[in-house]
Image (cartoon, rainbow, N blue to C red):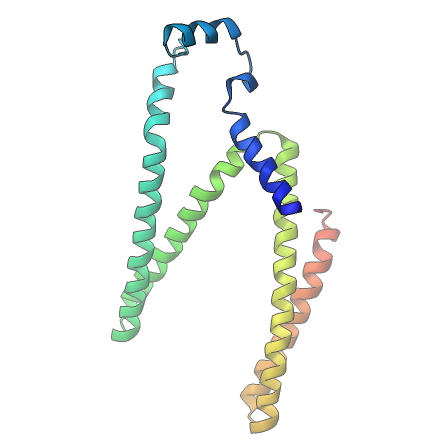
Length: 193
């Protein structure tokens, strides 16, 4: 029921800002005149033609940009596979840098509008707080997973009595303990939450 209600509220807000009755400074008389005369309402400001032209080509430019960066990432993956097959270090370096660049570019393109739309300081503070909570939850789940992997590696050590397994499980346990405790206490120490 909560999901249905949340979906309905989201749909309402998506479409409510496009309706003219919710616009700021809406003039009923101008709207009625344009409907009766079949004219469109235009803003006669100095930037109206620029705004109209940008709003026309921006969605297609965004889609093309995301597709190009995705192709660059796929080329990096293919380069990484070829560098592993042919054991070429230069290709591996190029592929790694390409994949990192394209990943960061996609993050900036996808997350950039969120930062631009958080206009007030309160919204930005809430966004940072939510990101810290997300990272805290992710690190707690990773710590739990590291403990599970450490238990499996400890079973391998007990079965095979090999020193590498002992070192790996000890490192995993120490890393999981540090990650879990730091993710629990550091946000409260720095008063981020």
